[in-house]
Figure 1 (cartoon, helix red, strand yellow):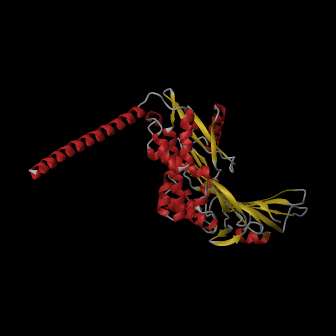
Figure 2 (cartoon, rainbow, N blue to C red; figure 1 turned 180 degrees about the vertical axis):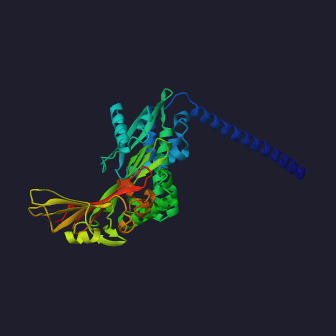
Length: 440
């Protein structure tokens, strides 16, 4: 009897346990549904958070990466403007890195309409007329971060909000395009740092739209950039300073670069612009110290600017001039002397006798404007000649297009520049080597 009662009791306990478990599960599911409904009501509430609260949440995410998820989830869905968590995270991460060079964030402020207009206008002026204008981002409110002690006041750290559909939201298109621009120039620096010529080619190729940039020229440019950074840029990539972060313009300062003389350490700026066609252009111009260029006949160097030659030396090389024309003397008694031969013109600086004759003078400029088939080919360094195509020139000097097709170098005698003129077919029609300044 006792055993049967115990058995019946066990059955009742099992039934009671099953009922309790079922109720617990039902309660759990009901609780989950309640939370979801509350969350859903929160996400779809009709009342937006204020402009100040939205700016505070973004500032908080910039201040500390641990705040990013909480800030993002605290912004009502419609005030996200469709911005994904990934873009929000990247946008705040980039601004955090930029902000870290300023100091500790203590507050933020909204720029006035006039301040925003000037900020955009200054950016447009820096980017140039071929870049997308910041005026295309109408209705933006710029927020500037304030620091306990700002160590970089000249390059403020700012982010954007926008007024849309009667309320303030994140600026999704602005942030997305700013992140795209940042990623592009970051990849550019990484390919250079890694010495990845093929990767760098893929970055700079879209910037070179003219048909003069054949594949071998693009390769030469990529190789030259990698070699230049290796030899002249002392700062590692992690020390590059982000100065401007906009969808149309991203600017970096490289703190330590060896200057053109090879003697001084200077900072330099690299800019990325977004062109009107949507493509990116990286302005990474620099003046590197070039090697001396000499004038050659038949491949043999025969003349160097800055040196003194006798008249008989010149006649031995070229024969009698077509034109020989001493000019007027300056206040130091020095006279410009022009000698023109078939396809070559020489300009000297020296003294002349009372009858206008001269015995020796210093060579200050050489111009070649066509080759004379009856005499040895006139070239510079045996590889630069009238008639060569512009693409061939870029294989010799890969970055000369960045300096208006002017190549500069220094010697013990002074500073000189080599200039090129082209015909309608983009072939060289004239080369001039001339003195810029003398050390005499």
